[in-house]
Amino acid sequence: MRRQTLFLLTSVLVLSPQIWAADLSVSDAWVRATPPGKMMTAAYATLQNTSNATLVITGVTSDVTAHTSVHETLTNRDRATMRPVQRLTLNAGERTHLAPGGMHIMLMKLSEPLTDAQSVDICFTLENNEPVCNEFSVTKHRASMKHH
Image (cartoon, rainbow, N blue to C red; front, side, top):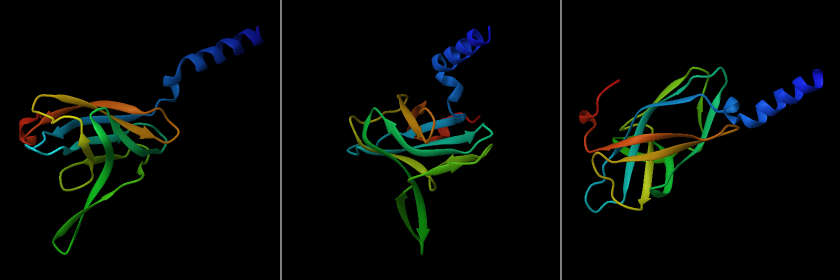
């Protein structure tokens, strides 16, 4: 009886990878529509770690780009510069905002321009967890998005 129970438990764990899926909540996700002639844009969202463990985002991917990465904007002497963020750590329960003028996702070398009312999937690569993908709405102006 004990052996059957152990086998059943092992089978459930092997067949249910979502047990280890990361508890990363992605909300208020949007991408700025590309201006004419531009093949890059930025994406924004609110990320929250809903688990009791630390989550580490090690990258981002999207089907519509050749290169996607998390960047932060730094202002030094009235000059804004961007630098890539290799690892974004969210402690248990922590929330962070990817917003214009701050940390954001850069979508570079787009396969096609992104237009208003379109949507794209962006996936977050997590250390020691399955990737978390979310749909991002494309919009020209943030004000046109409804707030949660």
